[in-house]
View 1 (cartoon, one colour):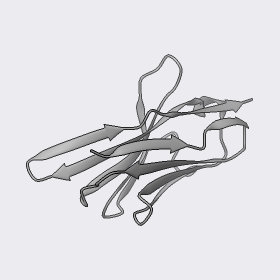
View 2 (cartoon, one colour):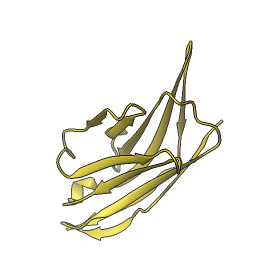
View 3 (cartoon, one colour):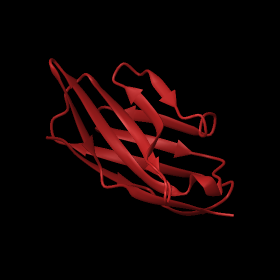
View 4 (spheres, one colour):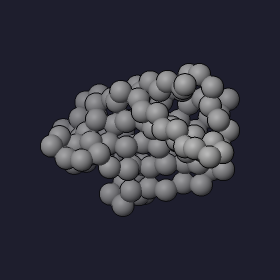
Length: 119
């Protein structure tokens, strides 16, 4: 089963930028969706952005126009470029891999990386 490791989180001032990376190790089924979710303190986990293996993308309303998801399948890596960061973007950011196998779907999560945006 694939394993996911996120990196790139940290402390940044409002208006700044960060790029998160998620490296996937292990075999990956070619039909898949890679996503970024986040969980702000005291709140539920929410979708930030996703990109399918066919390169379709979707963004959460609160990040559309500020964040960009991309993936490098040669490196088994998905990125989240975050710009114009706001204090409300503070959260633990999680990477998710969803593999769409015939007859089943397998989801795998990373352990998360903390992003803190100061005002």
